[in-house]
Length: 88
Image (cartoon, rainbow, N blue to C red; front, side):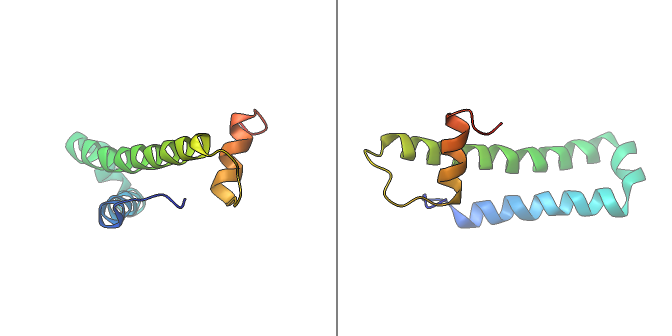
């Protein structure tokens, strides 16, 4: 994204997210039967989703603050397309 981020915090959230999927795939009965287990892992998945949303919003603001788009990357092009209703 080419924006500043806390790499350690992001890696922890990614690890929790994949731990959630591992639990769902290996022990789905435990995951869905025990409400506290579901809530714990649901929160871990939501944390990563929220963090990615914040990073995309930071990138969007950085793009909007630029006077001229000189170098574009994949994320910039996706956000630009979304802002111009070319992507849903």
